Amino acid sequence: MAKPGRRGIARIVAAAGYSWKGLLAAFRHEAAFRQELGLAMVLLPLGIWLGEDGVQRALLVIPVLLVLTVELLNSAVEAVVDRAGDEWNDLAGRAKDLGSAAVFVSLVLLVVVWGLVLGERLSV
Image (cartoon, rainbow, N blue to C red; front, top):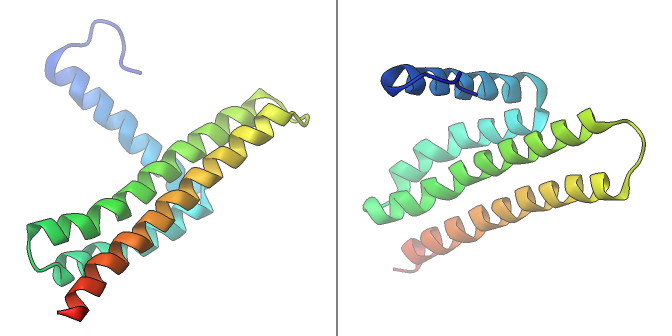
């Protein structure tokens, strides 16, 4: 969190630093994030190349970035749950399962959108 009293550009720079720190932590500690980042490195340029116009490019790029976003949030939930304790707790397990389900749904969304956009191109 930004220190109290920071304003303007100093606050923005500090927030960007915290965001970068979070991305590095996800890369270092989360195998799923690294795998999805690898997928994104392939799909993002491919989506830009395959999209015929700005709308198609956006439709192909947005779900890829959404998968990364949801994975970051899932990793945050897992970190907090793990920090809370090692003993089994039904709510902690449910929180982790819900985070995992959110990642799964975002991946399904990616496949559906890519299939619809590219399927439309192939049928023309």
